[in-house]
Length: 221
Image 1 (cartoon, one colour):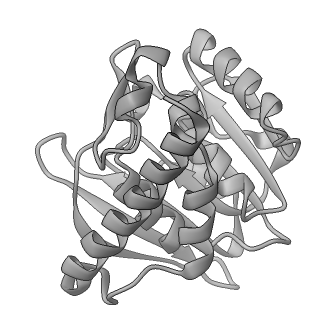
Image 2 (cartoon, one colour):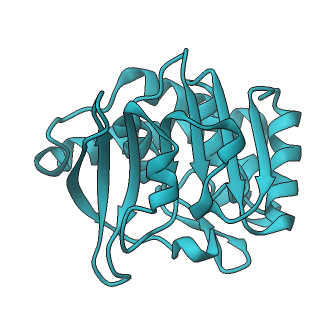
């Protein structure tokens, strides 16, 4: 397949995300995602963030396996989580669960700086190489336990966790700035909910649950 083929498929994927968002209006509280997010998703070549043999499937609105019992998230979920996080051009974002770097690349289009943590060394190294090849100089990846965040670069304006926790990890909450926001799946494996965590200016925390999701456990991120 040529770059033109992939570009056409990517445009179709963005259209499908928009349709899916419209259908999920009741859960999301709105019928359309932020245009900035849709543009970012339309820019990132998802086919370069999946194993080469799966590149022809990269623009289907579905998760895909990337090895080590992990997947790259469904494009709709990537877009929704990014929209809920609302990363701004002057903000630093922590991502937990780099995988092969697709979500980090989307965040890099929108935020000033992205710090990403991945527990599997092989995935972290592959993600770092892909991100550098595509010119995302504002992303840094390290190998580590994502539930502990990245204390050296804290506090963060925003935190996105691409793995499920039973409860909001205390270390991540501690690394979130007052006035900051975290988006993550919470709950048991059979009953996960996409959750927005907001910390106000004096450090009080509020949670808002939106929709059912399914992610791998945070202890594998």
